[in-house]
Amino acid sequence: MTSTIPSPTLKRDNGNDLVEMAWDPVTRIVGSLGIYTKIDFKQKEVVECHSTSSIFRGYSIFMKGKDPRDSHFITSRICGICGDNHATCSCYAQNMAYGV
Image 1 (cartoon, one colour):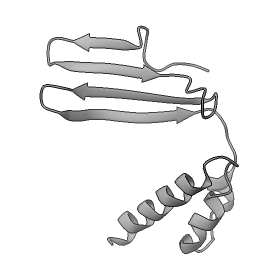
Image 2 (image 1 turned 120 degrees about the vertical axis):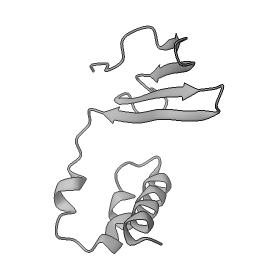
Image 3 (image 1 turned 45 degrees about the vertical axis):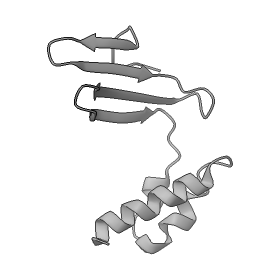
Image 4 (image 1 turned 45 degrees about the horizontal axis):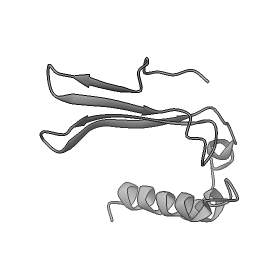
């Protein structure tokens, strides 16, 4: 797995009080997950946060053409451990897309 943020995994940027943190890999969930953040603790603000994964399961491919309202049923089968989290995120994404 490649890392998009260079070592060390915790870096303080004193120019604008940003703290960069990287958790890669997150092995307790899945070995291919990485989480990267930039946090301004002085302003109590998350400036940037993203995740990466090198596992391709193809859900984005076979969801094409499907009714989006079925996505929480389908995406909850992505893994056997955290189906409820995938379903919840899918519902949140639908709510944002539909303006709910």
